[in-house]
View 1 (cartoon, helix red, strand yellow):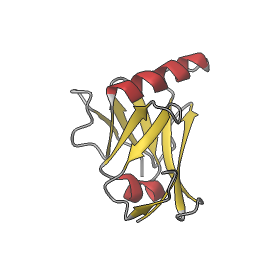
View 2 (cartoon, rainbow, N blue to C red):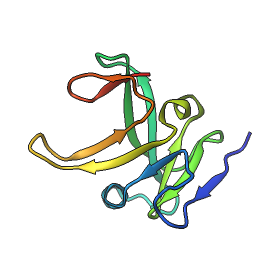
View 3 (tube, one colour):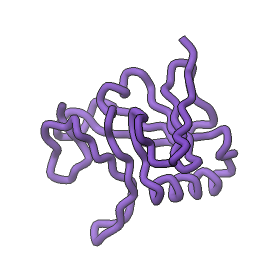
View 4 (tube, one colour):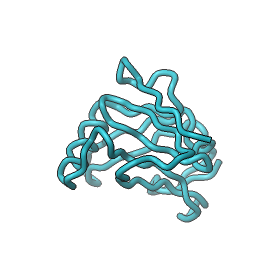
Length: 125
């Protein structure tokens, strides 16, 4: 099965498995460029892994290219890669960049979550 890239013309991710806010896309693109990667080829990988006090946690990393079975979407010029195993956990989520007293960083707002740990780093569906 080969990947299909879905480009969100409006930039807001409407109709995509996940959405990315404009600020999150800008922050990620700046980091991709800081790493020396080509933002037209590289992207941000969002994945779910076992761990954390609630059972599952999110992971983010930069990849030079998507894997063959990844869902690939583009939001505000940021390519986002999601593997099939993680897809069911993150469908309908919004990736945002938030700042505050606890520090700035990326945060997944996920409508599928039944409960989160106190720090918001892990979840249960």
